[in-house]
Length: 536
Image (cartoon, rainbow, N blue to C red; front, side, top):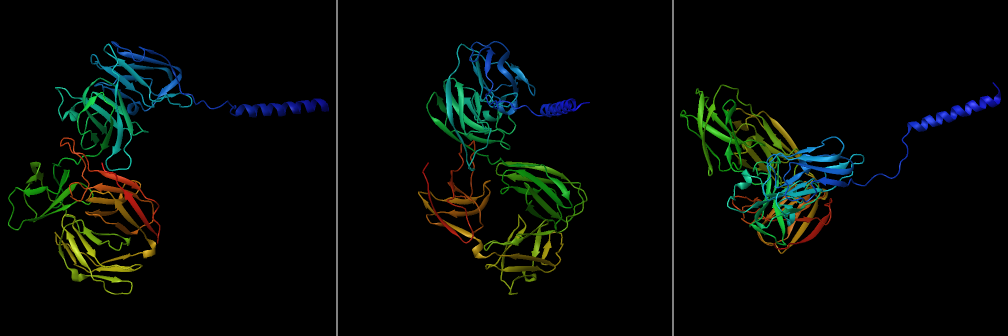
């Protein structure tokens, strides 16, 4: 082979290699497609009247997909039987809606698709598409608008349903528990405003739900609710504000059960504080009992002794709004052993008590068998407070900065309900330097007292709190560094706690105001901030 031919073959092979390599890559295209799909035609046409069919077709100019349809699609008025929507999970140029329900006469229906329609390639949404039809001669065209706020939190939940119930001869207060509304919309995932469209003139009850199971009915245990104080007339130009809240559940006792030796669990819903548990069975003269609350669960424990030979025990559980008899099957089981717990561990606040609590009820406490010493081995005086329902002793003692404290519990300082006692126990906690903390002074202007003033984290968890009944500056000392948010609860009934609303009683939640801090709290640094309140 001569040199010229060899060079030709070498160049050809190199060129072929470059071509193959290039073919393996992704060809460079033009700019990314950001154009959403568009509708070429609908059958019947959007906003058609005298609709008699059971099928709707919507044709697009390109392949589309439908996603998250169960959450995004809102049909107003709601249908008892949901329509079949295709395609789901596959690409197509058309959407088919097959109606499975019998449509009401002379009614305007709206299918709100939210952001569920996207093009197949880039996922560009066809946002907030609405298909509207009427079974009558005309399309209802009135609108109700407003905003959703959370009664307690800084931001409301997403995907909140807003509904109208028509005030006619069939309306009753409990309708929200049993029937779906006349009209409905949803805030979806990006806005807190709402607009209920294609409404006919009339009188309505306006409400909102954070609907746990998407059945368009209120369930007290799982749903948040908001409602307007009075019925509204449509048409009008008002913008409505709805405060979303969780109702305090109605009291209800759950069937009790024996869970260990001489320990019966009484579960409940609602507020346990007025709950009364009485044994109805005959008991011996030396029979005694104690009641404690579970640390976390909605459960009261009924402890009793001596051990009874009966196969079952009868109890009556009562409450101002509830009364019921229960039978508890009894068997011989092992009793709980005494387990003592404490909090806090590590650092302790200057005003914070040291808490000792247990899983079984305390019956005897000997303070002479407990000592507290600081880092200089000096005895520290203390006082105690006992809460029988939480079965906890709070140890209060004076603390100084940058100090360490050792608490020793000698044997038999605590005796429980079943005569179990503790062994020797040792605990250690310490305080920080004052310079490790920051502080804030708040001056309040135009406030209606009493108020609950809270500093919370970003999730709304209360970190510090003060209660005020008259005008004064509020000083928060010894604050950990960090970002805080201000929440002020107007304690209208003066009971020292936030009260949510109640739909049936037509009670709105107590007013709450939110403010931003001027700056983050920093160690060894103070802030002064003035808050101006606007009357509602």
